[in-house]
Image (cartoon, rainbow, N blue to C red; front, side):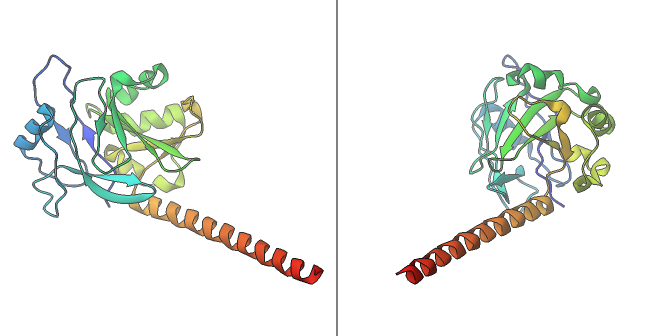
Length: 222
């Protein structure tokens, strides 16, 4: 199963010149070193390809659609946002986080490097935490202890914690104590999209029915 993951194991400080290393969990990708060098210098835009041995790709969500896109590098100094080509997803460094989010940055002994925020609709937004993986085995457990148990959507979360842990927030003040853990994957997104489409279709049918009833009543009143 493909997960929307890109786990960063290192983000260089502005004064550093070291090439950042990325671990892509669950996709079995072999990222070429020259591609990472291009990422570090901002000169490389990765390409989507059926040959995933040669390119660093990730799964993005846009309007509830799961699709694969390429990394488009626009500079990696801390404080700058990393945009993904043709995706609505935004990545930002931990240094840009709010104080509430920074307090969360050492969950399970893992220093958070990047936070990804994805907006699906007006009611739901999800945040994915990327950790550097020093103690990945404790990440989900520590998160669960602090913010509550996973939902039924992630019965297998303990087998997939390093694929990107997400949780849904209900307000823009990020009251993390009320957050619930979910794991974003294609099956979950597909089910969510189908529910939304069914709701829209039902609303459309109700509106059409109401218009027809009004028209019939208007004719009968003549």
